[in-house]
Amino acid sequence: MTDYTVEFVGTGESITVSDKQTILKRCIEEGIAQEYSCRVGMCLACSAEIVEGDVVQPAARGLTEEEREGFALTCMARPASDLKLDRGKYPPSIEDDAAVSAEPGAAAGDD
Image: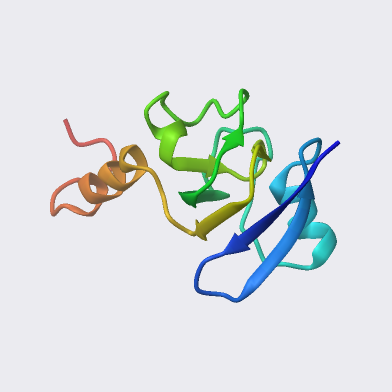
């Protein structure tokens, strides 16, 4: 078992996380306010941009293969190195969906 430092950009917060533990679980134990909802890698609420470092997250089903290179779902991600994460940053697929929903006339049920 190896421990890594996970630093959260812009907050001054950092934690030590084992390579056998998810980042979200450790945040909860340390009292760090990390958003989450489903805890199964689907909802993207716990998403963070990987600024520096690597994670292992084979069950991050909500991310595309390309998005897994730049984003971590903290409920699934385990550190593979020291990390710098920017919390509250979402992958392009969810940002694109949000932009479409915000367009005038894009109400639910419109075809």
